[in-house]
Image (tube, rainbow, N blue to C red; front, side):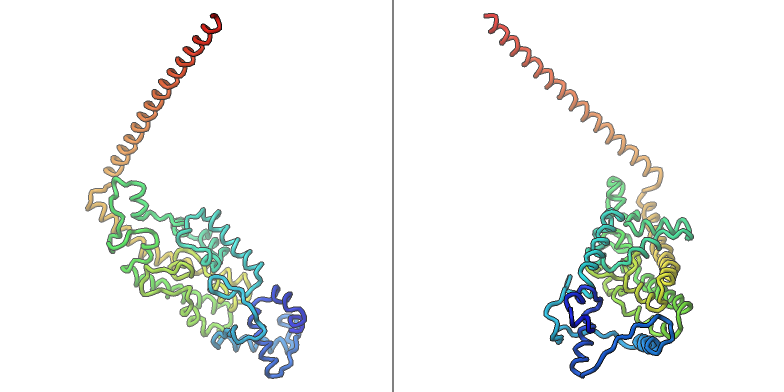
Length: 367
C-alpha cells in the first residue's frame, strides 16, 4: 500500500485487481485504519499465514464483492474493453488477446470465426481446450468426434448441400424445419433441450465430485451453486439465440473451456497440476456421451431414415456423384478445347498480320 501511494502509476501497471486495492485503501483512510504488510512463506504456520488462510476460507462462503468505481475518489479513469473493466495490466491484457487471435487464425484456421468473437476468445482457457480435445487415452472414435466438433467439421445437412447440391436440395433440420441444420443448430435444436440440460448437470456434478476428492470438503460446499450461476454455463430459454460476445454452455459443448470454470477449480485445489488433471479427466466425458450418443447419434439415425425415404441410397448417391463429376470433367475439357482453338486462331491471325507488315516494309525498302 505504501509503494502504491508513493508511485501510483507504476503500481497501476503491475497490480492485478487494482480497483479492489484502491477500495481497501480508501476504506482504510476513512476509518483511520493502519495496514501492515507481512510477507511470510506459504504453509509456514506463522500467525499471519494462518489468519490469511482463515480469511480465504471464510470468503469462499460469502458472495463476491465488486467495488463501486464511481464512489472511488482516487480513481480518475478506468480502462474498459467492450463495456467491461480491465482488472489487469494493459500489456498482459493485449498479450492474451493477441494469443487468442493467433489461435483462431492459425490453429483453428478461422473455421470457428463465425462462433468465436475477439471478446469471447479472451474468456477461453485455450491450453485446456486443446488438451481435452486430443486426449491420448480416450477412444479413437471419441477423439475424432471431439476434433470434428471443435473445428466445426461435423457432416451436417448444410455441408452436404454445399458439397452435393444435386442430391441434397434442402438443408433444413429434419426435426425442426424452421431453421437450417448447421453444427450450432445440432446442439441448439429445441428438440434436444432436455439432453442439453442433462449434459450440463452431468458436467457440474462431475466437476464437483472430482474436486471434492482432491480438495478439502469444506471448501467445495458452495461449488455446485457457484457453477450453476455462472453465465459461461448458462442455457438461455431460446437456445438458438447465442450471445456473440460471451460464452455459454453451447460453447462448452463445442469443446471450449471457460477461464472462469478453470479458475474456480484452481481456487479449490490450489495447484495447476491438479486443476489440469480435473479439467482434462472429466469435462469431455459427459459432453461426449450426451452430445454424441444422445444428440448426434439420434440425429444421424433420423437423417438416414430421411435419406431412405427420399431415395438417397449409397448406390444412387455414388452414381449421381460420378455422373456429376463426369459432366464437370467433360465440360471443363470442352471449354479448354474451345479456349485453345480460339487462342491458336488468334495467334495465327497475328502472325499473318505481322508477316504482311514485314513484306510491305521490305517492298518499301526495295523501292
